[in-house]
Length: 81
Image 1 (cartoon, one colour):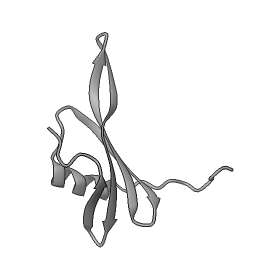
Image 2: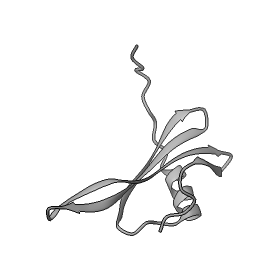
Image 3: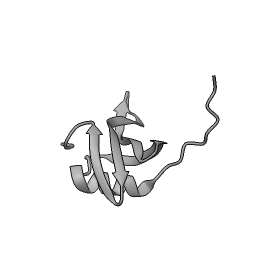
């Protein structure tokens, strides 16, 4: 069975999450994808070097509830160091 529903991104969720947990060193981007209702999977990507080649990888991943401008972390690290 295939799900053809388009996954929608919400940059506002990333902004609120970063303000709550802190911005990691070498952060390149953040993606908040609506999974269902007010629930989002938020991935934070940071710069990584492998054999002197720059790339990026997911350094933190969260499952959050974002409703009425309020964000609750349901799963994930509490802060980024």
